[in-house]
Image (cartoon, rainbow, N blue to C red; front, side, top):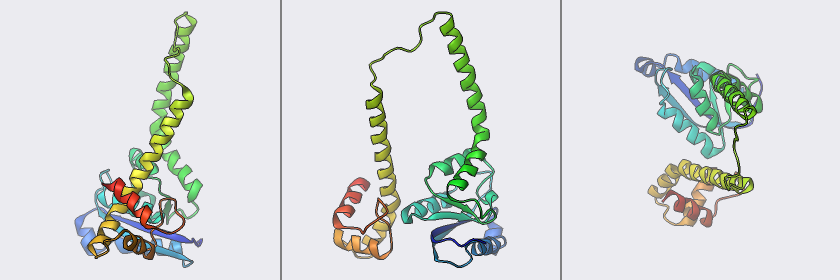
Length: 230
């Protein structure tokens, strides 16, 4: 097994409440994750256990695990691919979460390769959409050959449109990061840290990365996050 450095959030899933209480299946998953990590300079910063049917897509514990992974800039690790889901639509949602996912039963799949494999699972669902797009393009080409005017300048400047989309994406990422860190800041405040400096020191002590993933927290950065949360 390969060794991996960095932080991990472990996600375990059992299908029934009885299984969850007994620990059956759960210990096996923990052993698989332990074998995958196999020593090395790594740290499990948290774990979440889901007691759900694999057919459901609303998994609150997985959402918590993804938020925790984003908070710590950690990878999400599961024991087996089917512990996540067999649903292609759900895998699409996972890809959009912006979290590196590792599978203990497929140790060679990680980083860019892992994302590529997940994308291949998603591609089945995208096939039909692609076929529809091809038929639409063929119909438009046929209409153009018949002399029908298509498209035209509607006053939209492509460069401005791209800049606007880029700015919107940046705002969305910033808001998502603030939402991920909000519970941690709330817990720090409830523990007695009231000043911005005290909150920043607590975040640094807990090893929470800044928005850019480098450097240390300052009072100004905390103030910006609090403003976004508000």
